[in-house]
Length: 481
Image: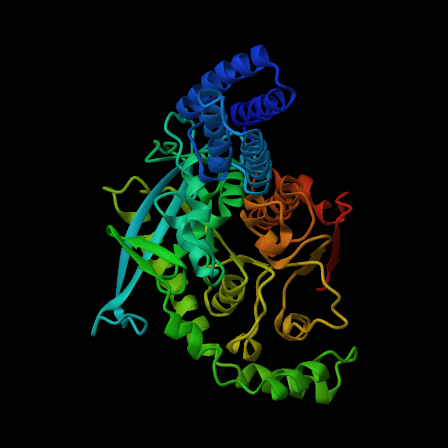
């Protein structure tokens, strides 16, 4: 909770107590101080909806001070309401805070440029516009040495409200995100005469690239360029040339409606067998081919390859600020959830990608019929995998031919792999585990950065050879191959 709003609410509570004990001098001075604090709070910190009950409590105190001849029971009732509204503000302001993302630990600052792309080789199947080509918005975050003077707002311009709405909640709940600053600035000058390894970022279904800012900023500050892909119509909202395009509900319905969940549960129960029996293998393969996920994952994999083409073009273009800035021999991909499955599928067919990280994505799609011949790091949330089915154990044991690491992080949920755990302290609201969000950022970033450092020989990676036995007590990591 921010300092001025906290002191203001405490002052309001003191004012309420002073009315109860009938101390006229204390009433007067508390109102003066509350007025000053309110002005400072609104001028410096700016108001937010969580504080509205507190503002209302203060207005009740003003009314009681002006109309001192009210019936004693009416006065007491008003004071009780004032007390309740003040406490409500305290709770709301703490439960839904104006949070701060962790400061990046690397030596570089973070610049950003947004680019709009159109793939004329593919028709957009999710748009109502007939004959439209597949469109993508990409965000390129890059290292800079220039000071940040105008930091970007985190999930501003209605993004937070749209995400909240996609979860079936009132959009105003996310309106306070306009007050949350990042450690990134648009169009900050990029470092000259230097190439950087590249990490492609693919978000989860109905998320977008901006929801991984705590990861992106840390990676970039350590000398990488991150290219975040917003998969239009399968992100909760994407801005494309000034138009805000929301998710396709029909597409979501097509992937979920009409499924035989009895059959699915039967296949999953067979897939939970500890031994890799013929019946287990058959069940997982049958389930994979039954679920209607191929089209979407193919689309996302093609998106990633198309973005790689554009990166190569930018690297050759003398007019581009990214001319010769991408080290095309050191390209990795990072995905969460649906994006995690997409980057692995793409890496199985895309030779330009040299290392892959999947953050808690269930590996459906056609990758089970391929091989992946590059290092793979899979991060799993904390679950009882004796009873929770995922295809990952079967699929990755089957298809990996290079180093394959499996890391499970204690006290985490599926949504901890991103910024969502900062949003609220109510874990059921954000579908996150109980791990502290700052600690989670440190663990996730350590695993990701050291993995890419190791396989890209970046930042003297010889010192990282023993990273996967490092002292992170929340992490259980196994090198499978």
